[in-house]
Image (tube, rainbow, N blue to C red):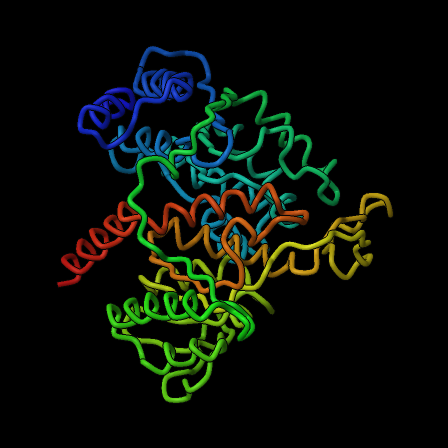
Length: 409
C-alpha cells in the first residue's frame, strides 16, 4: 500500500485520527512514493523535509512512507543512530581519501532512500561531518526524507562555526521539498489511557504524608510487577536510595563503567546522577536501550535554571575545527544543562527503541525544565514522556518484547 492508502486504512481501523494539518505532508509523501516507483521520471527526485512541533505525527507519516516500499529500498534510522554508524565507518576508513564521499557512495549502492528521524544538530563535530556528507548524498542522487522539530534554516542555530554548516542548509533547501506541519494538536496527548510512570518523590521529609504514602504504594506495585528488590522501595520511603549493596554494581558500556542500583533480567535501575551526569553520550544510551526493555531512573532533580553567559575555552572544547571568533564562542547555559541534555538524549533513545521507563522526580513534569537554553529540545522529551506513560505505549512495548522473544526461541 502507498502512504496514503496506509493512512486511510489506519483511520478506518481507528488506529489514528484524521488531522487536516497532516494532509500536505501526506500528499508530498504520496507524490514522492510515486516518483520513486516510476521508471519514466527523467528528472532528479527531490527529497522531503517534514518539520513542526512535537507530537504532530511526523514520525508516523514517515514510517508509513518507509513501510510502503520493499525491504532494502529505504534505510530508516534515528538521526543519532545514523551518526553512530557514520563514526564507525570513518574509523574503518581511516587513511582513505575523502572517506565521507566513500560512505555516501556505499549508502547509495545499498539503498535508494535515506530516512532520518529527529534531525537535529547541536554538536560541532556532527555539524562538520554532516555538512559535507549530506552534500555528497545529494551528489549521489540519494533521496533523503527527514523529520525535525525545526525549520532547515534554524538547524544548528547559534552553533560554533555555523558558517561551515550553511552550505549543507542551502543544499537541503535546494534538494528537498520543505513541508511544515502546522497543526495545533499534540497527538501524544490525545486519547491516551494514562498509566503512571512518573512519580514525584519529595526531597525533604516535609512532604505530605498522604502524598508520600500514595507514591510509595504506587512504586511498590511497580516493583512487585517487575520483581525488583524490596530494598529499593524501602529506600524510597526514606527519601533517598540505600540498602542496595546486594544488587548494585557496575555495567560496562562502550568501555566505560556505569553504576546501577539494581538489575534483574532486562530491567535495570539507575540513579539520575550516575546515568546523566559525567562522561555519557548518545552512544551509551543507544547501547543501554538495546540491552534492556525497562529502565528506572531515580531522583531526577529540577533540570532548568537561570541561564548565564559563558565563553567556550579556545581549543579545549571545539576540536580540530577551531573555536572561531570570541563572539561566536558565547553560549547561554543553565546550571543543569549538561545533565538535561543527556536526559533528553536518554529519553529519545528509550522512546525510539520502545523501552519502558519509570521515573521518580523531585517536581511534577511541567516543572522539570522551565528555564534554560534547552527549552526547545526539552519540549520533545516532555511530550514523549507523556506518551511513554500511556497504556498504548506500554502495549506496544509488550508486543515488541513478545515478538523478539518468539524470534529468539
